[in-house]
Amino acid sequence: MFHMFKRRKLQTSKYLSESNHRVYEPLIKSMGKSKKNRQGFSEKQNLADQIIDGRIVKGKNRNKIRLRHDEDDTVIDAKTSNKILKVAQKQRAELELEEFGPTPGEAKAAGLYNDKQKRNFNQSDSDLDSNDEEREFDEMDFNDKLQIDAEDEKAIKMFENKNAVKGKTLAEIIMEKFEEKKAMVDDAFSDAGSLRVEDIDPRVKEMYEGVRDVMKRYRSGKVPKAFKIIPKLRNWEQILYITEPENWSAAAMFQATRIFSSGLTQQMAQRFYNLVLLPRVRDDLAEYQKMNSYLYRALKKALFKPAAFFKGIVLPLLESGDCTLREAIIIGSIVANNSIPVLHSSACLLKICEMDYTAPNSIFIRLFFEKRYALPYRVVDAAVFHFLRFEQDKRELPTLWHHALLAFVQRYKNDVSSEQREALFHLIKKKSHYKITPEIRRELMAAQCRDVEGGVSLAHEEASSSNQETYNEMETD
Image (cartoon, rainbow, N blue to C red; front, top):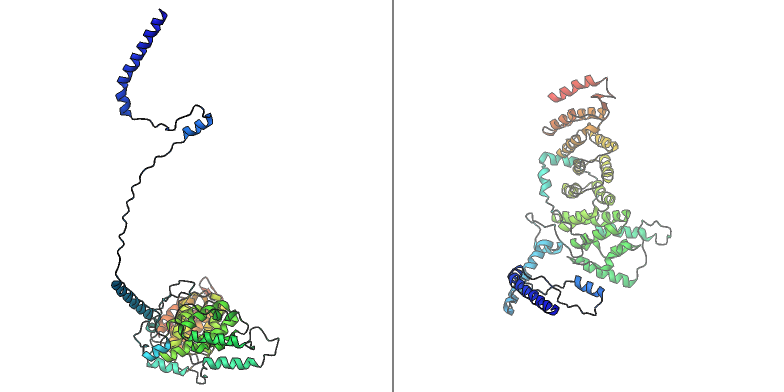
């Protein structure tokens, strides 16, 4: 009886399970299947392995669709390739001629230096470490500001140094230095800054004669390594003399200035600028009446040592007495367009104000004033005395002098003392310009002197009323 009941119960449960399966099967299919781990568990597998296998879900290998269009490699025939190469070579030659230009000898032979020639100063060199964009120099920018008529030319000639010694060539300067120091070859205690003359090995001399030939026709590319080590030699001037710097190309002079400005001390760089770079720049300007782009960039690189630049280029140029306005404008543009420490500029301005006056001096003085430095009072006083010493001069002053005075009072009128302002008023009464002097007087009237507190001069408190009448009279004049 019990067995019959148990058998019937099993049949009933089986029927119910089959009916439930038929009812819920469509619903289960619509819900989707749950992901199962296809890796079956073995009965003998450890529990830890089962847990690890259960946590890991292996990704499916999906075929990724990449939207890439392979470029069709087309084969160009030999005839077309030759045409393309010829056109590319022609374009490259035109670009090199436009960028680097001809050498001075080639340009002179071909007559390429003319007034309409525009030269590009943004040249790149494979041996250049920096990729600085060089600003193109246009001399007309300064010629527009500098308008000189016939009367100004006469006034400038009156201030020229009649006893100026004609500048020597670069070869003469180096030869004189060489002969002068040759007598000191046995002196073991000669100072380190002087020229060292030593016996040169014939092989070394032959090597640097080869360097000389390379520097003569150098245009671009790498400089010989033997040339780069010259600044490190004790007798560097003697070795430099073998390479004949007066015959270098302009591009070679630029590379040499880069190397020597960074490799020499301040004093040695000053001698290189004075004996090599400055004579070359002046000779080139005198011959072609145009500034070579490489030489202009060499002057900019020379500013790497500002003290050597001023002592080796600017001051010797002005002290020579035969500096032309063209030379002053071009070298002055280096000062105007580049950042220079105030101490070096102040020292140079002080020396220029104290030296004998020539027209190019006014160009540099004006350029320094227009840089708006915070000058020490000593330099301001020297500038005032520079202008005041012309009060009793009977010669007619050029317009450059009046422009320099106007630039001074515009920037530094509040840095002068009351005595200096009064002296400047008397100066412009005797030395006047029909257009510039009214501007100078207006600037001086608006000045607040450095020794004034509360609008009253500490030095001339009692004489302020009498001086005001004098100022009014000059204003009406």
